[in-house]
Length: 227
Ligand code: B1M
Image: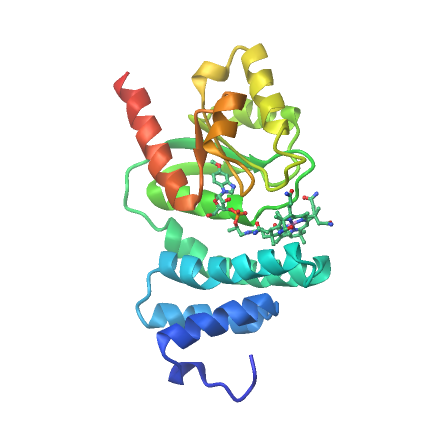
C-alpha cells in the first residue's frame, strides 16, 4: 500500500480492491490494517474473508498458473492471507451454538497447501464443531492416529494438487480395511476435486468451499443422528 493512501477515506469497495492488491503484493501489515478497517465498518468477518482475502488469492492463483508469479511471491501472498485470517479466526469461531460434533481435518500426504483447510476448520468451529486440525502432509498413519485420539464424527481431507488428490482414496481404503469407514462421515475438498471424484473414491461429500463444508457437515450429522 502506498504511504499516501488513507484507508479511512476509501469507499468500502475501494478498500476491498486495495486489500486484494496488497494480498497480491504480500503486504501483511497493510492487510491487517485493512481487515481491521473493514470490520470497523461493520462488514461481517465472512464477507471480509471472501470478498477481500479469498478474492485476492484467486488473482494470485491465476497469475501463478500463467507464470506471472512464482513460488516466493505466492508464499508472501499466503503469509499476508494468514495475517488477515488470524484476525478473523476468533470472530468466525465465536459461537453460542451447541456442540454439533467433532471433526478431524488435514491436508493429504505430499501436499503443503493449508489455507483452504484452515478456513474450513475456522468455519466449522464457528458453526459449533470441535475441530482438530492436523495440518499438512498427512499420511494414512497420521489420519489413523488422529482418529484414534479424537474419535471424530467427521474426517475432512484437503488436496490442492492433481498429484496428491488420489491419496484420498488410499486413506479411505485404509479406513475400510481397518473396519472404521462406516463410523465416520468423510468429506473432501480442494480446488481440483469434484462431486464425481468424491463419489469415485468413496467419500460422503465433496465441498466446493468452506461455506458448503459447513452446510454439508451440519446436514450429514443431522442425517446420522436421525438414523
Ligand atoms: Co500451489 N498450486 N503449488 N502453492 N497454489 C496451486 C494449487 C495451483 C492450482 C496453482 C496454479 O497452477 N494455478 C497448482 C496446482 C496445479 C495442479 O495440481 N493441477 C499449484 C502448484 C503447481 C504448486 C507447486 C507444485 C508449485 C511448485 O513448486 N512448482 C507447489 C506444490 C507444493 C506441495 O504442496 N507439495 C506449490 C506451492 C505453493 C505455495 C507453498 C507457494 C503456496 C501454499 C501456501 C500455503 O498453503 N500455506 C501455494 C498457493 C498459495 C497456491 C494457490 C495460488 C492458492 C491456494 C489457496 O490457498 N487458495 C493455488 C491456486 C488456486 O488454488 N487458485 C495453488 C485460497 C483457498 C481459500 O482456497 O485452497 O481452494 P482453496 O480452499 C477452498 C476450497 O477448495 C475448499 O474450501 C476452501 C475455502 O473456501 N476446501 C475444502 C479446501 N480444502 C477443503 C477441505 C474440505 C472442504 C473444503 O474438507 C471437508
